[in-house]
Length: 154
Image (cartoon, rainbow, N blue to C red; front, side, top):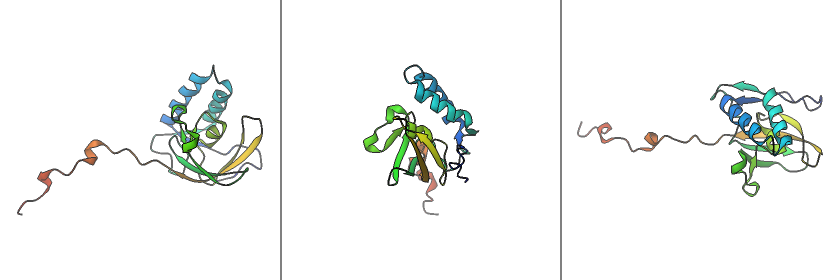
């Protein structure tokens, strides 16, 4: 992946159709009470390449992804990107509506981005690794095989 932070251009990002739809609705919902967060998220969504669900590579930050990144302010950190209602910084769950959460969405391992903290200072972070949550298995997948699949006495 190309690192564009030296030129001031933001890196290319990719977002699934469902994440794009949910995040667009979220940004619209919070626009009145948190216009800055809404505007930042909408700006990222506008420049994103939207891919079909299931087509976003596993090394790309999506909602629910665990991300290891190196900020310019210190040691590498690992966080999970979540919706605001699930945010818990003490558990490493960062809201998409935080400046760093908005900066992370759609990035892939190896990419870097400049972002602005709430205090107005500019920072850079580099994504080191991304992992996706294990897919929830269907109840049918968790069943013990039916006895008819066991060949008795054959």
